[in-house]
Image 1: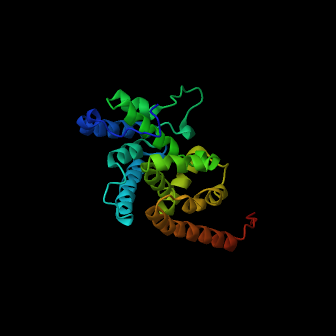
Image 2: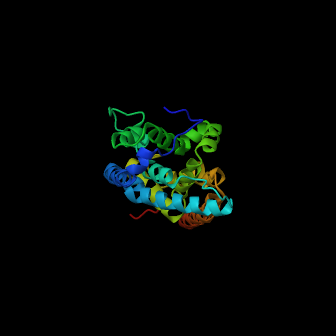
Image 3: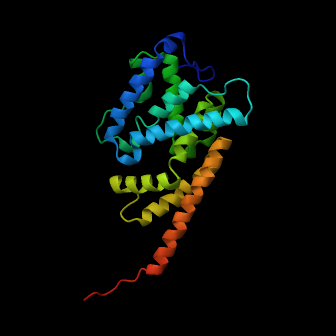
Length: 237
């Protein structure tokens, strides 16, 4: 891979094929995501893309930088491809490409450097990897600021009303956490409600706080309704 301390963004060759590259990436991801359940479908990818571009634009204004902080093409490619190779969906016995994003991009004509950059950002989006080594993510963001934007966008889509829907959908599709809706609430506590503190941009934090309120309100209503029901078995004989 290219030296991460000196990342290559887009070469002249990359720019010359950019319309075709974006079109092929869009088509590839749309087909690729069709194998996943609707918690991680193409609609999720498009939401992350739009959120990432929104965050990038807002951060450019917040930081009042005369120079562009982010490469929007890199953001677009990373957001579109961020769930390619997701380990949650790898089937038993499936041959796994360790760099599926780079393999695709280089295969459709992108430079090695661009392939490395986007692959590195996609790898850095992972929540589980950040939990294991949070400093690594912070170090990567210093080199690839686009990572902060794409990561925040992906996590924003995991919370709020959409996030609640996605959580129940994934639980139903994969049986994650075991049977019963109580396990979804456990997921709120173990992961989703922690995401606000893991946002990397000011815009991400602001958007996350609004959506976390929806999550907390839902949890409160859930507990109130459960308490009202009492959890007592009724003999109907």
